[in-house]
Length: 75
Image (cartoon, rainbow, N blue to C red; front, side, top):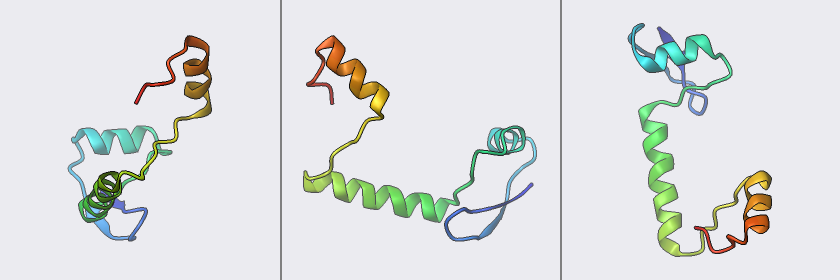
């Protein structure tokens, strides 16, 4: 199965029987990111975490649940 990376538009070949290929085929809303882009993003994210200024913004639903249950110090 041929797939295109959403960031760099590089065309990659996936095994038709792999779990990722099946997921992409059955749920077209899912997107594919090549290994190079995935590695680059994870390295930069780890570097931002290391600065100590990185804040994780939770979806609104989770924020409301935390406030109701008094779980404000969940990380």
